[in-house]
Image (cartoon, rainbow, N blue to C red; front, side):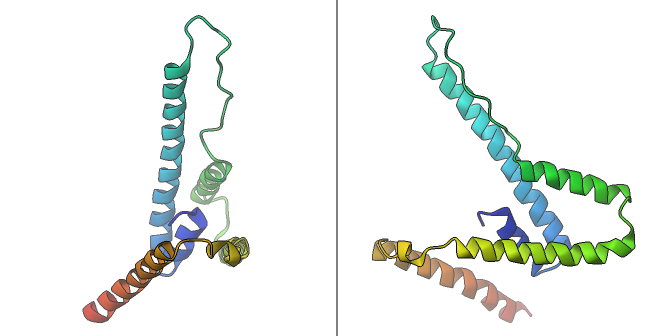
Length: 145
């Protein structure tokens, strides 16, 4: 799953513990992407830098996305006990509503007409992989439970 919001939505089906684990893993992967990006920029600078020129400078980029910083602040606030237990129900409802609104907004950004220039082979593979991704878990659930 590509987006952090999609990971949260998918994990929320199974419960709060799954959301915590899935979100932590996804955000760790996002942070590792920052490290990989930084390393690739440094490698590129080394390969292209003219040792005689001091004018070669890369612009500074943020390695940590803003939403990861906000997430870490939220974790710290929640872990500190500052938030009263009575407020957690309302915060949970607001988080669910905002997540649903965000997922809806992502869906609105899809232009279906842009999908049709894709070759039929690509659409076929996407359809088959989606069907497999849906039927295998449901089949396993029916088989095991």
